[in-house]
Length: 353
Ligand code: ADP
Image (cartoon, rainbow, N blue to C red):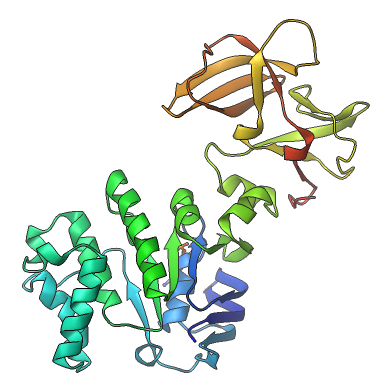
């Protein structure tokens, strides 16, 4: 059992509430992500799990045991730091051996774990090299491998792959996900990259100013964000969120930008949210409103498999995500619409309705 539980945990630094009344459970064997902007409290949560910081209030449990007064060394959780410094004078192999030798693990067991982790991280061929002869990506993998060989109850990773270039980052996150599944270990992972969080996490927590705003599976949060804040945090391009007014024929956004014929639109809604992929864009025939509201194409970004179209409509700008490479030019008139079932409604406090 290596589930990790926070019960109403608060951590302050002076007047800063770094973690504000956080309660969550990271299940055994789960890939759990903390995602939020810089300074939202992600690293502090990791340090609290590790025992490098003490909560001002609340309780932390690892594997069912309260650990508030348990030292970091006794918590059996391993950290992979962002800039984890490998020992420069040691080969990759000796770097990986180090934590095991230190813990007096028997030699055959060391070799077994090394071979195991090296195979899973595809670093068998570079084990003889010192860090200086490794690429940045290889160094990161060795650093990850060094945490993995310890076989702890849970691993913590603080933005472990943000230093890699984009392509290697994509490869590495797939590998990490695969490794975590194969090892069947609890992994707590911090990232400020929404795509990374969504791609790796079984479940994720979204943070704002030290507060957990929503916890759930990525797809669940994406489809049913609890607030406008969370809705904006996931998805690229970002969800279009527009002020709305109720009219005779449904709900209308930003002075005629788009009209949603939704009889069930909640009366308290003051904003509507439209995912870019949910906005339908059709040629404007000049015939009126059956096909949607008129909009003018402001700019077109062809991205290969899909195209982002920025639209000027009414008083607002909207972004629509279209498949493939449609024949749409800047300044053209188009008709835009959105199915009522795809619309998100937000109330006075930003909460989803
Ligand atoms: P993140 O990891 O999301 O960037 P952090 O957990 O590092 O966020 O920081 C959360 C808040 O706590 C920030 O306002 C930060 O300035 C503050 N903070 C973090 N560590 C310390 C510290 N050692 N001393 C004072 N303030 C800190």
